[in-house]
Image (cartoon, rainbow, N blue to C red; front, side, top):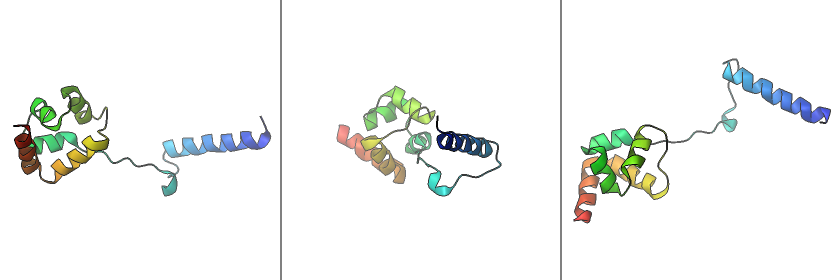
Length: 101
């Protein structure tokens, strides 16, 4: 391994340790922030249990459980739908239920 490459690798490892131990704060441009929805709060605001909510939004019960337990994050169309529900849970869930009938 070339000395310059090894020096870069070592500096990166030292920076990682400094960040992990709280001795250094990473640069903002180096940080990745992922927006996650609070699916449990959205569902509870709608007044539905997990099974009802899953059926209404067209997702599986297991998916809703995973989102609520933060094991997975909704994406794509489901994330957009949950965002709309979050804005007015009761009204949106009522509209979705009406569309199912």
